[in-house]
Image (cartoon, rainbow, N blue to C red; front, side):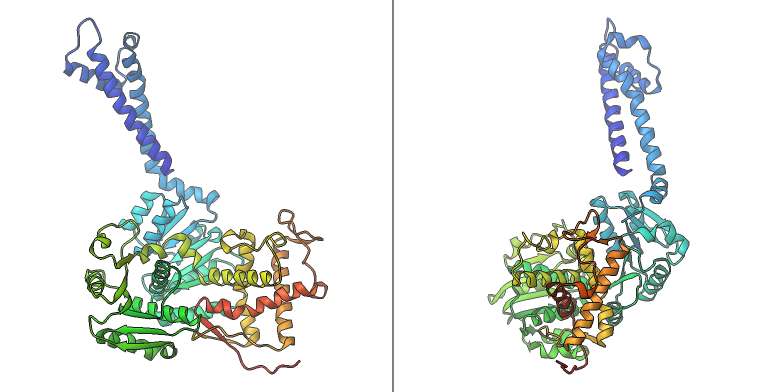
Amino acid sequence: MERLNRFTAIAAGVLILVSLLFGYVGFLTLGPAPHPKSDAAFAALQLFALDAPPHIASRSSMLNVARFSAPLSLVLATVATIVALLGQRFRRFSLRWRGHHHVILIGIDATSFELGQCLLRRRGTVVAVDTEEHPQLIALQSGGATTLVGDARESRLLGRCRVKTARHVVVIGKSDTHTLQLCEALAGVLGPRSAATVHAAIHDESLWRQLGRVEIRQSRPAPRMEFFNPADRRAKAYLQLVTHELDGELPEQFWVAADGLLGRRMLVNLCQQLALGGRLVQVQVESDTHEKLIEPLLRDERWIGSMMRVRVAEAGEATGIALVCSERSDGRPLGRALELAQDSTTERVFLCAAGHEGDTVLDLKRLSPRVSLLPADSEWLRPSHFFGRSWIEIMAEARHEDYYANEVARGSTRASNRSLVPWRDLPESLRESNRAFARAVGAVLEQLGGTLAPLRGPVLEVSLPDDELELLARNEHDRWMCALTDDNWTYAPAPKDPHLKTHPLLVDWEKLDEPEREKDRDAIRAIPRMLARVGYSLEIPARSDTH
């Protein structure tokens, strides 16, 4: 619709200019004596009123063009106006037949607005909902989004959004309480088999962590909920960019100039990232940062004390890599980064930028080649990053990586196993199979009687008695069979056929050969590594080995 409106408006403008120019020049040269310029201009304008004598075309080819282009430009301009006026109504009406796999944004703030803009630039179908009309909602509408004004806690409005057939629903309420109320309303509309995933922003760190544990441990069929903390997502994106700048390897020692929840989540994620490799984090901070950031963090997250060594230093003693991230939007973080870059002992300074992709307010390379401004905001709000870094997606990717490593260790090759490809090249059907297992982890945790705790060190293997591992693997195979059967797959001898939906492994556990059973055991063994990727460790009661 927007492309049609843009095309007709441009075409109308071009034709108007052609009509005026050709008409003016044509009337100037018409007749045995040239027309006065004022008469030629007036006659050219008369073409738009369809008031030109019909016989003039035979005497001037330019007037012939102008005579037809003038009324055609009026027609196109009228069409553009009608499209602009009815475009929003048309988009709302068209949701009835094209409202599938779209993205719904409930609550428009700076975060959802930027995400919506990115989706629209990629020609995605976006539905934006808020309680009142405001400039950001209007801007999304102008960019091509379908906009609705009202209370999204009402099932009638959610029905107009076609929420049951959406691919993603992003919820950002006016408060965490409001967000949970919206999630409750969505859960009442969405069924457990809905394809939509709800991504809900929770700003309170403690509430977000508790909701995350509850969601991972969910063992009953329920709508797909993903609770995210904006500061944590931004901190993860920042560290990802830092890792990329350092060629994929983080050092163990940093000078840290950070504050607020962003700085807190940055340090937590840094500790967890290095803990996966069994390494400690050595941090240098000034006394003010230690008092306002480090001491509360060590008090609230006691496990970090065993993973992080802190040294209080004076300004000018920064060494190695400096991490500067602040929730302030003024120039203080930038000034601090440039100050640290003046110290000869500082190798690189990485500033977590508040700006978005494409901002060129300041070229830091001209001020200091040691300072790198990393656009964490634009990074985490890229749709591929935002939707691709949910706990479901991260755990599913970890499961595939574990499967890949095990199969290679057994001697499989891509020629013999077409699933041995990186996650980005994996067919969508196999990605969804891994996501389904990630969602089923809660049921396994319930059977294990396990609890989730913050990741405190290297991932430890879970030692289970053989009979318990066998039961969990059998249950996983049964779950997988039920999922395929519900999707209309049937048994047929090898090979597997995705088009006919036939699979040779749709048989009872007793009929599986040993290598296939081992793959299901591997899936259970992979759960601690999957949980570690989202910052949790699995703690289960001690078992006695029965074999």
